Image (tube, rainbow, N blue to C red; front, side, top):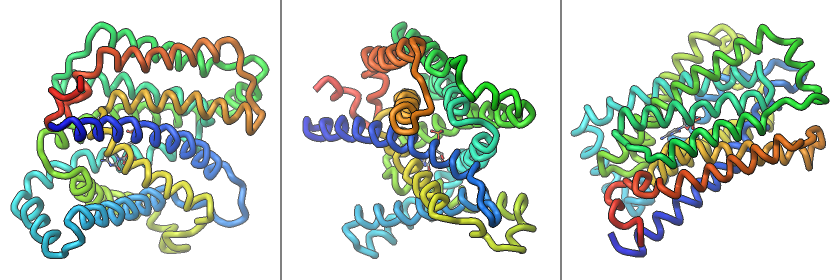
Length: 341
Ligand code: C5P
C-alpha cells in the first residue's frame, strides 16, 4: 500500500466519522420531532419511511458503482455478472444483516415514538458494548487493556452526561408515560443487539472480500428493500390501501428519510475505513453535540457538573480507544502494515 493511499484511507476514516457525528445528531433530533409533531392529517408510516430510505440508498450506490466503472454500461454489466450472477452465495449472505437492519430501523421509530431523544440516545449507546462483544467473538479482534478501559470510561461518561437534572421537565414526562417508556426501552435494547451483530457481520463480509463497499451496499439494500416492503404490507397494509404509502409525508418526513439514507451510506464507509467500535464512539460525540444544541439553540437544557465530567470522560475515552486501537482498527483489506505511516 502506498503512502498516499494509506493517507487517503486515514482521511476518509476521520471524514466519515465526522459526517457520522453530524448525521446522527440531526437524525435523532428530527426523527423525534417528526414522531411527536401534532398535525391534522395522518402521521406518516414509519415502515414506509424505512423503505423510502432504502430506495434512496440503492439509487445513490448504483450511481457510485456506475461512476467507479467510468460510466460504462458494459463494465457495469460485467461487474454485476461477475459479482452477483456468478457469486450467488456471496449475495445471499447479505440477506442476514439486511433482515436484521430492517427490523432495527423499524424498532428505532418505535423507540423514538416512546422515548425522549436523550433517554433514547443514552440507552442506544449500549450498542457499543454489544458491538465490542461481537467484534471479539466474530472477528477475533483482540482488545487491549486500554480499549476495554476506554469502553468502561465511555459507558460511565455517557451515563453521567445523561444523568437527569432535578429541575428537568423530562422526569415529569417520564412518570407520565411509564408504559410506553417500557416499550421504547425494549425496542432500543433489541436494536442494540441487532446493531452490534449486523454491523460486525457486515464488517466481516466487507473485510474478507475485495468487492467495493457500494456494490455490497446495493446487495444489502435490495434485500432490505424486499424485507422492508414485506414489513410495510404486514403492519400497515390496511392503512396503505386506504391512504397510500406516502400518507402524512411532509418536509420533515423527507428530511428524516434523507438523513437516514445518508446514515446508511456513511455507516458503510465508516465500517470499511474505521470499524464498528469507532462508529460507536462517533455516536457518543454526537450525544454531546445534541446536548449542546439543546442548550444553546433550544435553551431547554442546563448542563450541570455531571454533564461536563461526562463529556470529558467520553472525549478521553475516544482518544484512549484509538491510542492502542490503531492496529486493530486498521484491518481494511491490506492496510495492516501501513497504519504507522
Ligand atoms: O445504529 P447503527 O449504527 O447500527 O445503524 C446502522 C444503520 O446503517 C442502519 O440504519 C442500517 O440500515 C444502515 N446501514 C446501511 N448500510 C450498511 C450498514 C448499515 O444502510 N452497509
